[in-house]
Amino acid sequence: MTNLQWCIKTESLPTITLNIGKYTSIYNEYETIEEDLLNVINQYFKKRNSNKSHVTIAEMLNQEEISPLSYESIIIDNRAIDNEFLLSSNSIINKKLQRDFYENIESSSYIESINVLFEDLLNLINKTELPLKIKAFDIKQFIKLLSFEYSLNEDYSKLIVRIEQILPLLVEELNKQYGGKLLLIYLYPEANLSPKEQIRLKELIISLGIDIIVLTGSLHFLAEDWKYNNYIRCDNQKISSELVDNLLWNAPLNFERSEIEQSLNQFILAYQDKIEIKPIISNYQIAQIMLFSSIDLYVGVSYMQHCNHEFILNIDETKLPLSMAKYLEQFVKEN
Image (tube, rainbow, N blue to C red; front, side, top):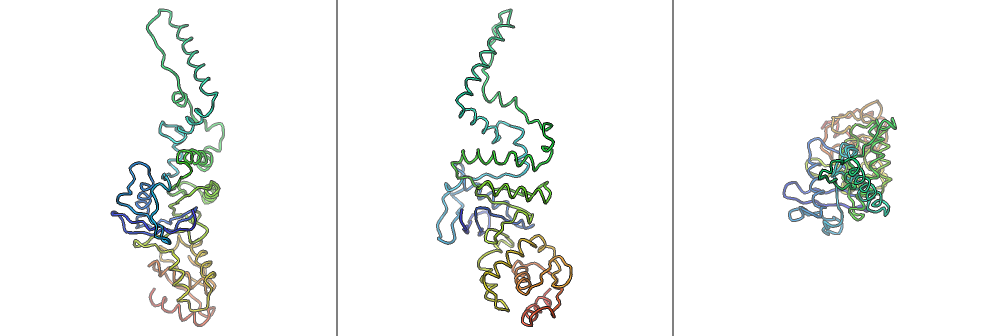
């Protein structure tokens, strides 16, 4: 998946544009419809019962509709991954074990030998010659006898260790089932994980090399490039190339586009989780958002305004060029 923008149209939701990459992140905004949107995407990329009759997903650059057959998607979260250890009949790991059984040419001979031994055992104990018959033993019954023994490794008490053990196996099996067209939608991967564990999980996810959309409330799961991050507010995508164009056009100083993009990227990665709490923005004191250079102040304040969030400016104007200080005066009055 390259750098794309999807325009998603459906009867049940407003039309939304998403920035899409190999690793795509959607930062959760408390009053919007990200989960509903992801459910629409998930249902669109289904071979069976697709919602394609009333949903359109188009690539913005070429205005071409994306075929529902382009991907096969599945939604997961940490609870669903952890439940795979139960080996229920409809679990992905159960299906993987069955697949591995049938792909191993020696497996069937073991099952046949077990069934022969069962018959011999029945003949041995059925002295009264009751009309008894033993049910044939198969791979499904064998899997029912399996269980994970966490006590063999104390690290299994940690959710991150269990996820690291099972997630690559899930992806391997799903890629086989879907013919390499897997689109994984991962909801809140940070759930029940420490910040350090979140970093480990993100590194694992990226190493799997799959197309993935993450819905998160954690900075650790944001994409490294703003082009693959999403922030939907008031039914609009707030992170876009149009935003960068406007920042470049309205700048009070002569900034290069690359400088603006770098500053925007840094602001999102550092402060996206602060923008909804009416933060204090300062260039000389400790505050929720600290921006010291002119370009970072310009981009950060403009992004806050663009997202329709309130903020408080605590600025030392003597540390700024005159044109920058005058530019910020309007926000002091407004906020």
